[in-house]
Image (cartoon, rainbow, N blue to C red; front, side, top):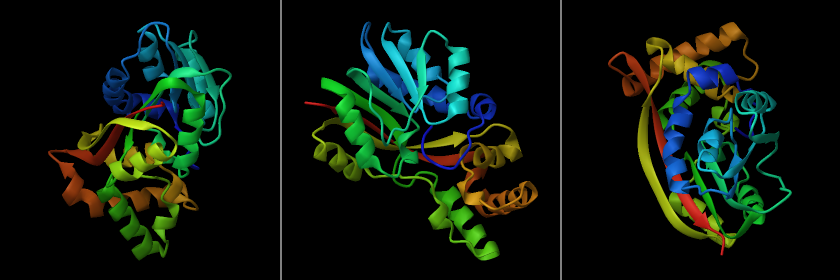
Length: 256
């Protein structure tokens, strides 16, 4: 994961939000890594997808802004090179054949800088394959959060939103401006069931974003999340479980 004040809890990420890596396997299929290729996993988290890619025989390096995530990745997969880095401003010692990213790019508010760094690190003909939150992603969660914070606490929640959710057109233009050829792009719905029944939304908010809750004590945060759950329940709670309203953007772009 990348830029935000959010502090990632690697145990929660692996045990309760493990669907992130599970869904990412489809992005690995689009990447189609080959033996001997050099591949950078941008925002690698705890390393599960970097490992999945490495099983093809590709030489994988994982990068993430979270020191905790990288420490866990190194423990889980000591045979893979992982390091701490910022996707909005990074360089790499050597060119790579592909840059891969799953569930990361929506944390970066300077997408043009990310794309520039990716382009610089790729070999000619190299590919950039990624999936992340697209336009309308978690829209119902955001609406409920905005309503509660503004109504009950006088907080402009929009100023605390840590995410960037572009449309296909918006992101494709940024890629093309950097010289990429967009070979594939799709925007799709993926409503995703959370674990732990009634506690599912709490887990997601706790595990995915602290930015909305700056200045709240642990007890106050609990109360805020309960209010958010009340607001979002009709849209997102079905058959005893919370379903987060994901909308994903999946792309493949080629460096000429």
